[in-house]
Length: 266
Image (cartoon, rainbow, N blue to C red; front, side):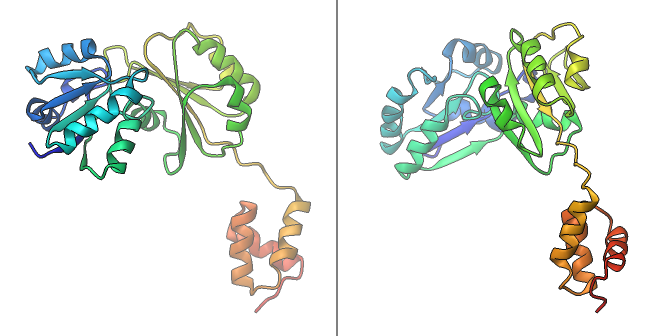
């Protein structure tokens, strides 16, 4: 196995999602840095992985990173795994990768499941742009509401109903998807407005919240007129395209507005 750091994704629920490459890498590296060696021990037993392992979690990552980098520089191959999913995504791994980059040692990724992307595609909300905000923080939710595209949070079952109530208060017009137990037996996606979901029984298990893109506000005639005046100097085709994009109206409607208000007809 080539010397370097291997970032290895592991299942988030269903062991069948473990890739053959991940098993191969974990069996053949010199050392595995695991978020919790006891949790990883269950996965290792299932796939007959007998590689030595050390703990590397949020409370000791700062301390063990230097030692791991030194081992790699001495020619060792080290794999990093979290309890589930991809290391570094709301899990330990970020500091280790950053240190490896700073030390100019090779870093490879062995992709695996991640709850963020899985929940996003299950929600049916727009996927072209999204923001992952980690674990829900009530103190930041008003600022988060300024994000116009899809928002994704992690949340615990103990706080989920309180979080839904907060979303009902701050983002009442945005639908949310409560995605729980992804890839497990009781996987479920519940979609609705926060106020409606406050009436449901508290969901259990591992939970991801997706918040739909903000509904586009209809511009007033005065606002559209202001844009018309702003783009009127351009030729009609260009002005119409600019007006349609900025006002959120069709090009046909944009042409009509320009003609009504005496736009340039070049």
